[in-house]
Amino acid sequence: MNELIYTAAFYIFAAITVAAAFGVVTKTNLVHSALLLALCFIGVSGLYVLLQADFLAAVQILIYNGAIAIVFVLGTMLTRRSSWHGTNDTEVNIPSRVVIFVSGLFVVVTLGVIATTPWHYSSGVIVEDTPSLLAQLILTDYMVVMEAAAVLLLAAMIGAIVLAKGVEE
Amino acid sequence: MIGLAHFLTVAAIVFAIGLYGLLSKRTIVGILMSIELMLNAVNINLIAFSRFITPEVLTGQIFAIFTIAVAAAEVAVGMAMIFRVYYDRNTVHAARLDEMHW
Figure 1 (spheres, rainbow over the protein chains, first blue to last red):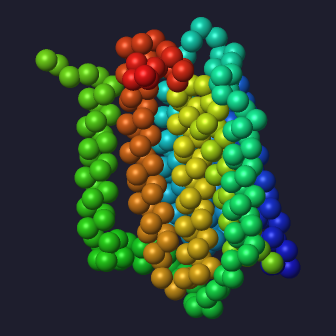
Figure 2 (cartoon, each protein chain N blue to C red):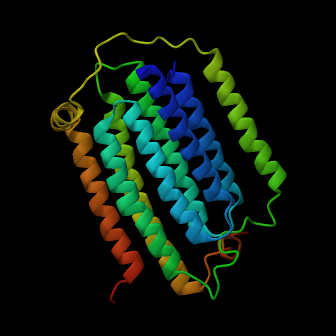
């Protein structure tokens, strides 16, 4: 019974993710694309829950939906033209058949690799209490990476302010 | 039985959709959205590998956290650049931003 519920939940979240991602690239209105992007992020966080990454599911909702999707909607509003029609068109000068062929080829090759690779599933114990273990790892083994990420975020913040506002000379 | 291959398949499809959008979108905002889709597909892969191949250590989830941090920084800088470009040139169409095109 649990197995059935897990399978159903996986297919529901996978369908939400893929359908929303497809909508992001096919909608011609940029606001619809931004809102579908938020829905796609929610589907991905559902997949994280199914992968027993509960902390990352929460982080996904907080950062991607709370920050990134909102920044996209704001950016869309601030760079809008007179009408919303055709704000997210596909470029007419690019041969769409070639692009679809490249993307389709990528899927086919990747699925072939996934199907033929012999995966070695581990039977180790699954970590239940992820947030505390993640915190422990980040502050011990991955300390330097965490500091680098902090410096990167600071640099990105300063760079964003300088880029958007301009420098007084 | 849902295994690793199912999650990898979803991630591959989302990545290919993002690749299509990246190559075919007309505005730079749409291109940035496609890049976000691709980053999310990579995160699904990292966490799926972490869950099925090495469930007793959390290396994949740590990597996903740093990917999310880099993605957030990337969106902040990208949107700032889009505002700047819109302010200077009054367009966000990628084809019209061709000053560096030879």
